[in-house]
Amino acid sequence: MASSESPYLVVLGTLQDGGSPHPGCEKECCKTSNPSKKVVSLGLLDPGSGKRFLVEASPDITSQLKSLNQAYPGKNSIAPDGIFLTHAHIGHYTGLMLLGREAMNTRDVPVYAMPKMKLFLENNGPWSQLVSLKNIKIQPLTEGRWEVISPSLKVKPLLVPHRDEFSETVGYIIEGPHKKVLFIPDIDKWEKWRTDIVSLVREVDHALIDGTFFSAAEVGNRDIAEIPHPLIKESMALFEALSEKEKQKIIFIHFNHTNPLLNENSEEARLVKSKGFRIAEMNLRLGL
Ligand SMILES: [Zn+2]
Ligand SMILES: [Zn+2]
Ligand SMILES: [Zn+2]
Image (cartoon, rainbow, N blue to C red):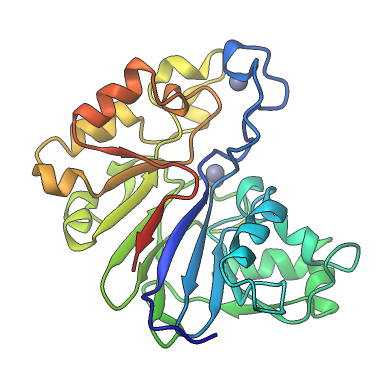
């Protein structure tokens, strides 16, 4: 189904790894369930070539694949044309399990992974079985090198500092014929990164970035030093000097269940928007 329509990105999930409602949470934030919201994931669609890719294999991959497939209903394959992984934390790769023999039993689905992520999948069950049974085919990524995935789409991984227990962590720049989108769902702190995020925002058209916690108050009895993220309050201060136009590029994503931005009518959500920033929503579509 060739089409002259430009490629685009669609937000298929906006939540932190544990989702919402969050397991074990008895607080107000998880009193009502929110089934329409999913764990962080993006779809990349290129109507010209009929290809569609996932960025992240989240625990919500079943519904996310369905959304991806609905974009091109004529296509007979239910597996995506490729999956890009950022790192080995549960919200970002465990959806791969559903590609295996017990579920989809896919054939050679390209899974784009950095070197440590690749080794992790190859050497630990159940992921190693996806490799040995050829359900997936790992495509090695190199930091800073473009991966051309369709005639009009390319993707580049950028290493970012994060709790790298099992793998390194990357963010991606996704580039189409017209637009460039930065995606960094997890990073410890902007100051720990050797890249200047403010300059990088100027170079792209949209930046979907770590908005896990609005403020330290959300973390409760857990030590925030063990789960560092740039707090949205800190990020807004960092980006304060950007022009209105540049600020509109910033779209916070990867929200913890405690994050008040999950309620679009909260005071905090209104504050973020009044300062010129954006909040990722399900099915948000960005032209590439
Ligand atoms: Zn995460
Ligand atoms: Zn909660
Ligand atoms: Zn993580």
